[in-house]
Length: 423
Image (cartoon, rainbow, N blue to C red; front, side, top):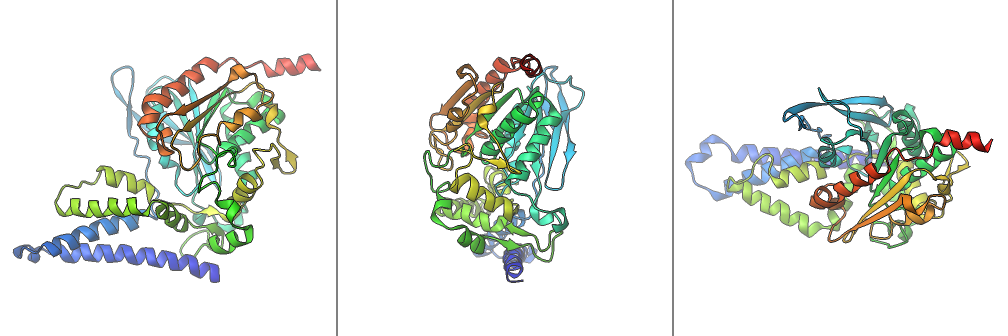
């Protein structure tokens, strides 16, 4: 009960802040007060509006908000989000562009499960939709998953990816963003060995901690500074009374959000202070830059405790991917088994989460892959967010990734023929 009480206490604090903001905004906006020119009431209303919006967004899953996409015929075609595979802990969804012939390029975006929803990649999806059939992993909030559904650790996560890739077939081009890069590499190696006919056509790893020790950062080195016991006692809580997952052990999104914000507390404080003054001056809008960013940034989800703890222990502490010793249900996955899938890594020069060197380490592990099928790109001046969703992605990285896909799609060796020849 102690852990459940802590979870509910955090929710109570969030709910209280949202109520205080709403109350301040309502009180200061009372029509009769307009008869008296009082700047303090204006500031109080602005503070309340910004505060209510911020704390309300913390428990709301953002909508994809992708309604249409311009196509080659000069028309905007409607976009529908359709499930392909539905599972307890995550779905595979497809952004179907209505009344458009299916695109030759099929892309699977593997979204992070690191505290934010898959909608964090909304702009990435939008940038790819005109040229590709886009699929994405849509991970679920652990607080909404009943305990009866069982555990979900990094091995389960990897097997989900295996099933998703098998469903989409060998013509799929996989792009893994940040946290899932190591496990996507492992899933591809697992397919190469167990289900070679289902290997993807290409694999692009963007800003992922394949080898966290290659260039340690404050984020990737965190696991080495605390023991697993300390981590479990300080970070893990049980879902509270108001959710379907009551009693499930999780790493709460609200707790992780506090860590995100503390890393750049001054910058966030300045952003919110400036927004309050903008609202007071009547210069803010519902979809201005501040609101668009923080509506997504503040929307957080819980991770299962076993996923969070096994990620820290096995990916960061024990470096199982970097040392090629990762196992799934007792079976050791050999990354060297990847021989047909072209692999590209992308890093940002100023990435302070997965610094340059961590992701490109994947290429050294691909001992069975010809050098002609390996590629890497270091984006000058780009931070972590910019390499998959900012101007660096749109203007420089996206064209390179699509070019890499076009150069290598359809050029895989006929695996079945190879196996037949060997036997």
